[in-house]
Amino acid sequence: MKKILNLLFISAVLVLFSCDNEAVLETQYNKDVMDEELLGLVKSVNDEDPLSIGCIRFNYNFALFIFDENAAFLEAVSMRSDLQFFQLLDGLPTAHSISLNYPISGTLTNGDLIEITTNEQLKEAISSCFKEERRTRCNNTLPECIWQVRSLDDELVDFENTFFRVDNDGTVTYFNGVEIYFGTWVTLYIGDDLYLNIDLNNGDEVEEFWDENWKITEFTFSSFTIRGNAISLQLAKDCALTCTTGFFRGCELEGTPDIALFNFSDYAPCIAIPDTPDELDPVSHSFYETLEEAETGENEISITEYTNISNPQEIFVRTIAIETQKLLEISQIDIQVLQCPEG
Image (cartoon, rainbow, N blue to C red; front, side):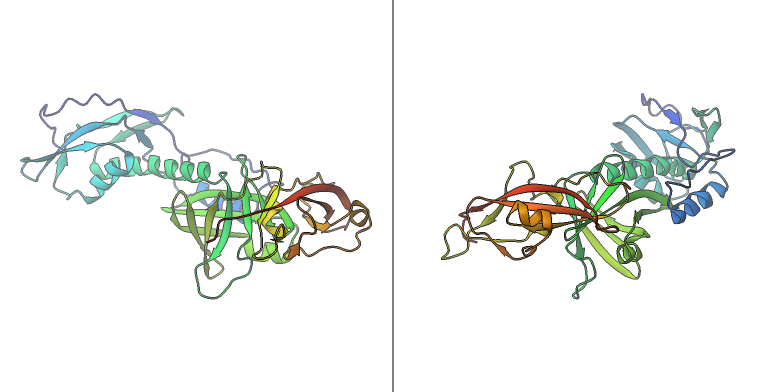
């Protein structure tokens, strides 16, 4: 490409570093903690030919001049992000040029040399950074609040209105009513597509449905859409549940002062989960009006339609391991009826 004659002095410093597609001589995989499907995907990605272009990080903001095929000036554009820069290069006609001098060369942190000589190679390098930013943004968004499963079709699907809670370390707790399952989910790129690989443990029906490399087809800070098992689902952020008040609160029923209808599965994410002999064993809660009934497991109250008998009221929670039916803990929650505004 011809050199642009001193039309722009760009003070942007290019920081060159390697991305996750760099070549690795030998990779050791921990098969005890990595899902078999994910292991296969990771291996297939590493077995591919490594990209010749690494990631270039520009310091924004800066300006670029655009020239036509005759080197005539067309416009000046302010660059503010990797996404904007990528989109500009993606839409730039082949014969047009920008006010950057090629080659752009340097050394990656792993010692490999990088050299970019065309707009297409520069677009590829910026794309590598953009993928990493998008995946990081996705991972950083997931641990906020809980995520409710919603159907995108008219008909209800299995496990609709269940919840995921994601921890910062990538582990996930899945709430199917008052049954609680543990696992992991991992975001990864295959080509240009972003995926969410979910792996839940020790629940046949739950695993059959959820253990999948789901394709993320749409993503915002408040929801994302996944597709797999021939269906599409939305996971929507739900920040309405507050676990810090110390009370599970319900709205007073019309004409019945201090009486409300409680669905304890809605409060399940706030109930402490005891340690289990096997950390991956799922657990379940049941609910009782007295400590004695919770200890014996007798006279269990309705999980989804319980009407309180006093306000406030203590409720006792019996938590067992689903696989062994072993009693793990008896705990207590408090429910409270409030007068809620109409509508």
